[in-house]
Image (cartoon, rainbow, N blue to C red; front, side):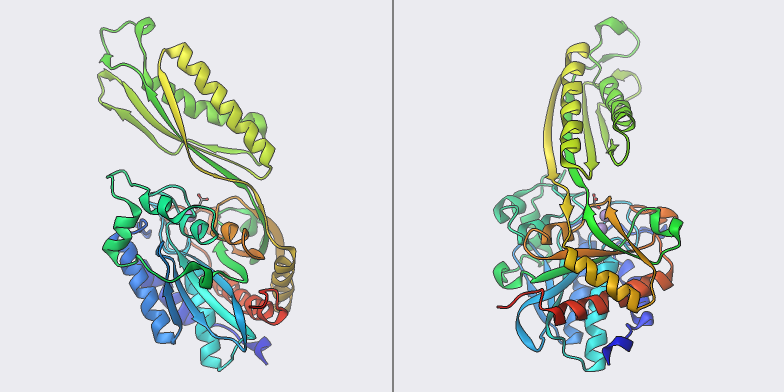
Length: 416
Ligand code: HGY
Ligand code: MN
Ligand code: MN
């Protein structure tokens, strides 16, 4: 019976290493920005593994890649998946682990000659990180109908290249109709990227909700002048406002208390030289909270701080929302299946909230969805130091296997 079925640990761990070659940053990490040459290489590798598996392959117009295995009954698939793109200083597991564990689930069923109760599919979504093109979770958001395809394809990177041009260039501007690709239910396996599971000595978590995200780009325009001759009272210093904004964000998060978080991830100054008062600053703000009206409160306090700073320093400030997603509650039935299958596998688990954004939050807009987490060593992620214990990676993949089989049997994915 399939309850004894286990994935091939060797094949999963080997493929994680083989995929990490694409974008290898030389320090144990990976830099594989969306629609870059490194992303193309990883996509090509994933596609080759899907073809070796005999999966039905599809690529949609935003470059999402899907591998599908037919089940005993027709209809929308139970889907898993994640992303192959990384942040600039990424690790080997963020995204890639969920994609390759999904591939491993299909390979395990093929090797065992098991036909699932309904179609299963694995997806690699385009531009989850949003580092090169904003917003993040873009490919899954477009598939979910939350962002017009034309708008997404027109988003530009800092060099002025559009996502559409870049997908054409790397050969992943697909044509598969999205309607036929949408899942009937979705479960994503991902590293926790935080300290909780390791601290509690747990191997897996059933993720039941995910916090809201607000990304803002702030442009501050002051006046360049001589650093030595300009009296402090006459300055319109964009650099000073940028630095003060970073401090304000820390004070805001401290004042609001957990789970509010606030991050100033980028500060770019012009002309960025030692003896010139900066005339311009470009600053990014990342605000997150699991409660929507608290996130709105943080956004409102940011805007009033910016208005006051502009008056006090005599600078012009313009802000642009780059991404805004409300908190998401995942589907209780899917969470329950994950917990039940964890118990059957003898894995101690807990429910938890995701601090990071994930493609699952976009699939939750169109079907029952939830996530599985495995521990991150020292809670580190978005860093070359990102790693997880092999035993946990294998345990998570086995839980994904049995959760998907159980969801296929349950019929939660719906009928055609
Ligand atoms: O920003 C996030 O939470 C995700 O890694 N894109
Ligand atoms: Mn991720
Ligand atoms: Mn990430």
